[in-house]
Length: 146
Image (cartoon, rainbow, N blue to C red; front, side, top):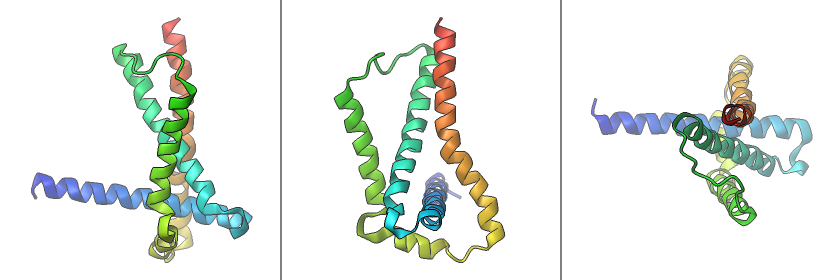
């Protein structure tokens, strides 16, 4: 199998996994609060936060391991808000624009309850683990630099 074909398969698998994370969190949120709570947007916020934490974790790791500071200690508020808005917009166009979340729901709705429960543990680990790992790295970085 060629390198490009393998890379394409890996990217497709990654995209399928990311769509599943959205699907699982969306249907979970909708089940708890109903459609009136706009679950498609609630999950955009959560996934944008997780993605942001993953990006920031990489930046903190680079700082801890290599001593290379990518961001100044005090990030300007405007730049932070723009970064957050960009992440939110990316997720909006990936999952909500033109009701894409409905198509994603149809794609995964045939899973069994056992499969949903098993995969759900990994989804929650990703969502909360991303944020927890970032917070851990921040404290580790502060402790190391003292």
